[in-house]
Length: 147
Image (tube, rainbow, N blue to C red; front, side, top):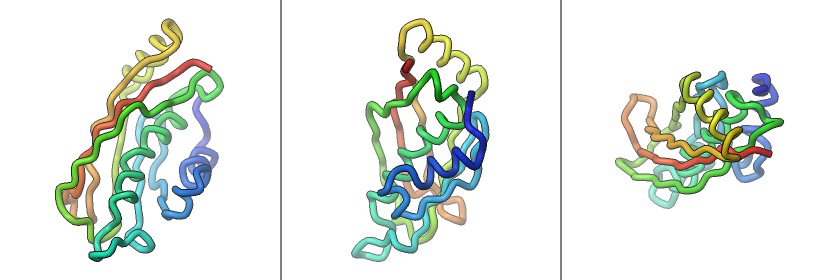
């Protein structure tokens, strides 16, 4: 059973101290869909754009947030196996990312993890500024594992 919004929000925003310090906010946490925002304030680098580590964090956290809203947390847990980030342009303001998994894909992953003890999936995401311009693209390899 996935978690209610407020619990998923607290875990997404506050469970990891680094993420909490970054100010990351969950804009939407629904079964199969999340939208997260990384604020520019507090995450600036030496040239006035968003720090690469903040962008990487924004690209990586949706895998866990999707897990919290889409899978039975008592039966499964997520692991990130590999993460790639391609920077496209400087991020000069707050940045958002949306990630989703269809109900069919969620069911497939649960069935496979139940059968084999684990199931792998890929999240390809676009990190966007307020005008909708893509500032970075990520590709994350995740694994859903049985407890």
